[in-house]
Length: 157
Image (cartoon, rainbow, N blue to C red):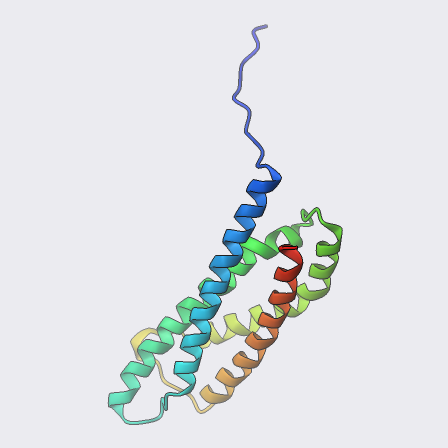
């Protein structure tokens, strides 16, 4: 029998993994900053004003929803996936992540529910619950950011 010489897949080194993690964190934090900036702009608009203001509010809302989903996905697929899959090697980090992840997941649910309700293109109607929905989302995002920062602090140690 003839042996086949399959090329070996090179496993990333610890430095390469850390570099990739830092890049993921940087991307997530940049998206988070963009989401917060749009959140503040959106919170300052009156979507119930005249038609001339409603169109920019709808456009801003769509941009916000897209960035919100991108930010949530960046965290989930780049940072939390290892934790959820149980492949994080650093025990202290894994333990902290297991403690924090349910609360982060709760904010993910709130964010996706908000997106499902308000990601409606240029035909959005702003229900009377819009301001309270936005406020609730803001509260959950604030909690999420605090939790992420704790996790990030542990990751970059």
